[in-house]
Image 1: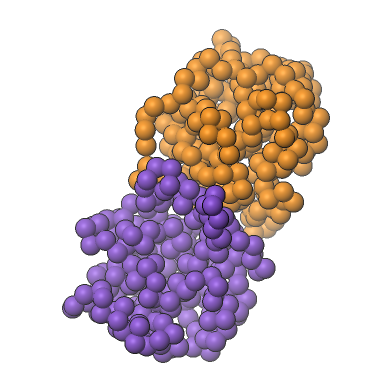
Image 2 (image 1 turned 180 degrees about the vertical axis):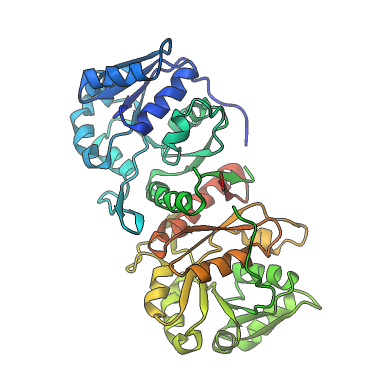
Length: 223
Length: 223
């Protein structure tokens, strides 16, 4: 794999649903890497609390989702699957023209563990692309453990982030963003129409974590 | 991950559809590891030709699929998706009670590359489980490159084989079989209901191979 990455150091990063563990974990890592990070939530005050919880001195602020969507250069969607479509529909104009990174995993849970839910559009990422025709939708960050992201003792995270999308410049940008997290590579993983299995694979990782008492991720070999 | 693997050295391995590249590649590796390997095909003579093509002195024989299914201890299904259901229906009695390892990837191809096909039962492996209610169906070996398996210059193959199934003894056995291929680990990957995304992920690997000119596989981290 080439080491030539786009220069993304100056991009600000918004995280919709950034008060959840996954969103806060990504916020933490991108802020530590020097990005201006904007945590979004339905409630501006909860967003500000989440930003403050990440510690003093980091370039993280909190605000309502709409303000974050309007301000940030790149916007990560980290909301629960339940509210995914409605939130994106409400932010169509704010997100127009932007790279929107969907990391949502539509999963169900029962006593046998996790399983993939059927999604009308094929995947959460494809739903985002349908709802946001004027945005540049990329799928990425599905498999990163929130526990590891949030653990200040974990200096490097041992996994590859698969980055999927139909817009080469957008996937290149998100691959470079992934690489801002120490230990992580961003690896191109195919077109959006192949996003379902990447989202659904999170169910397998949950099974693997149970069996091996791990925080498993994946590395792609031979690239 | 524990290093305690079941002792599977004495198991004979049948490969239905063993005249294709994936089947021949697996046959080669298991024979080199010392297993009696039985290559199956609709045509006994083509099966014998495939066995002979793997070279002198290896414990590989060829025969009709039904004879292979009846004789082998463990049976790998490596047929094209098109003939999957019909073949398994025709071998229900021969496969009763046996571990049946499905490595079939239901994929379509167009000018944009590979994509996952819809499968009524959810996945090829689940279809096998429906068609073979008296067999112990396991899903594994989806991502191993036939090119690497068949290349005598490749001493070790750098990937983990994800092994899925609902029968712990059967998945443990197949994990140990995977580890008979130098470089490979067999890692438990969840229940059969989560096999779809593992099969479909092969489409992503095809995209990755195109982009990076690689024979990509995956490693599971932290196990």
